[in-house]
Image (cartoon, rainbow, N blue to C red; front, side):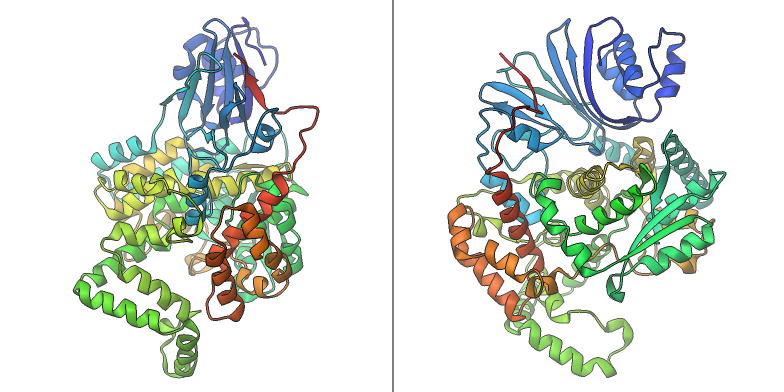
Length: 595
């Protein structure tokens, strides 16, 4: 779309939710239509790009051509809800919302960035600004890229920074009572959810029955004159099923609830779709149920709200509590004792520990019984050799603890590790971990997962928790309002309990988990064996075949559960085999600026 006076032309993906408010602020204009895109262009023409962006509330990635200055600007929303890739290909500067568009551009060679691959092997995603291809990058959240000539060097500046927001908030926290803090959070939630309920199409909400999604559903229903549509998928295996909890919450709130119980085959059928859906290797296995949930919702609605972001904002992940507790316990032992304990745990096979635990099950108190105790003992051994809490935390984020061992000729960039180091200047370790997740795991894993899965079925997913004003408010809250008495999301729970009884949502955090470990030994074994064969691994020349094969054999024998590191390799191998031979169609979807 071109601006009214022709100076600007925009290509836009996303939504600016407060465009009506901006339109009213601008007064009478000769408006041509009713879209947020037209309002964005008018705002940029009146106030300039940077001033206009500061007014936008929403999720967006857009390219803006300034004909007067002969400049191209690429802009990505504050928290990274919408994707934007860019780079140089054969002398042209290219950009797109999807890598598949850039792959189709003439002259693209698709050289794998081994250093980015090492990052992927650690985290199961490629952290920004890296991309799996050499010479291609992700624009980081809250950034504007400006290019004056096609072969010139892009200049990137931030218009919003989670790091700055966290420092400002923790340096001047709100000094208010618990009751006032809860009331303020409730008002911010009503505002963020209400703004995202404005739509001229049917909309609903993903409901798992946990704190985050139940709060969004409750606040939606409180602002709706008719039952809100809620959607849940369930599994027949009790250890993976949250649908029963969601159904109780939906019944209490009075929503119009839809649930679908899936068979293992339903989930397995999605595996072959992943390379096309996630056109960069992405191995968070929760992508499978997220896609199936999106597909279910799309039968009834075209927009769905989700509860993503609540954990990062309000301290909900178990690893925040685990890291602090483990480090405190480790400090009671001298390093030599910790090292000896680690060696002892590593000397006993997980299967042996599982057998002993099974024999002791009848005399072990319920609170001290764990699933897969052998695997947990091996993880504990790796943590015991950590010299500081940052290393413990990084290991909780890691699938391959030493990616350079498995990716040939790679040097792993310090991307997430450096982000954590920067965050450690915050007052508390928990806050440093939350900021690190907000800058990396949230945009590059959680939001990537939801965006690609929902877009694959033409469903628009909106994330109220990530309204930037709510994010800024969350950083002003003292930590004890988020984590209290060993429980995360304390303040969010207080808001939720106004609408839903505590006993309906008081349960351990589950999340979407799938029995990948069993599938790899069963229905997915043939698929996996082909991708992990010595021939396949050697042909690609990217992985150390012996290392991968060693883990595969241990997994098949049942002596170890290597589902996560193996899933990373499998997803990459499948993606690589299906994308490297893609023929370029006659129509090229990538945009480019030529010199």
